[in-house]
Length: 312
Image (cartoon, rainbow, N blue to C red; front, side):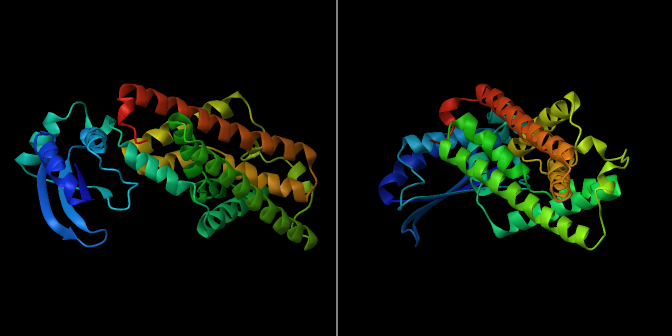
């Protein structure tokens, strides 16, 4: 179940109240006249089955409830538990299974958040890439996994897939820009640190030329690299639309975007053209594969739902 809070101008309240009271998927409907202060107006609170969130919000938009208006506010939050017959009846009235339903408003809102550049995003990506650089030098798969988990790059990748499916070109541009700038900064920082380590005698070109069997897949992409990127991208997008964040951990440790960026930074510092090319290709294969898989999965999910329910 999801809880929805509306702040409406009084002229919309009667139509909204009548509309919501007739829906079997809606329960716990409260209408509080003049309860809202900023923006001023009426407060309408209700709970709705997950499968019906987007259809209900679409119906409200047809009544004039526009979240982009200065005198209207819409807030959505998931209810962790709602025992009782009323919630059960609302769930039964909604078609399909809750796990298969997509709340497009939440997916789009998360995509907007994931494309905002922030200090923490760049810091995490730089730290993850630097950890990956140490991993490839020491041939440590444990550090590779750690770097994958720390890396925050899947957020803008999934946001790019959402933007392409919903044709939000500004959102797509922000996602691409964040990915490009983020990896450029992370690789640059890693390369500079690697140059400092080389100057101190901690690393040398021999560290890249020696056998590293546990991490050599990072700069030697093959057909399986693309297959894994596709599978990880599909699983990641499904976890986002289904609200299962724990699945994302598995996605993080199955793709080699950050490890490839870390090896690229080291290879640049040590002037190893072969590993620069291999790492760049691995990075590109993963980003493209995850985006394509995310686009495909979201497209199929959108076909299984009603396209008119996607927020404009």
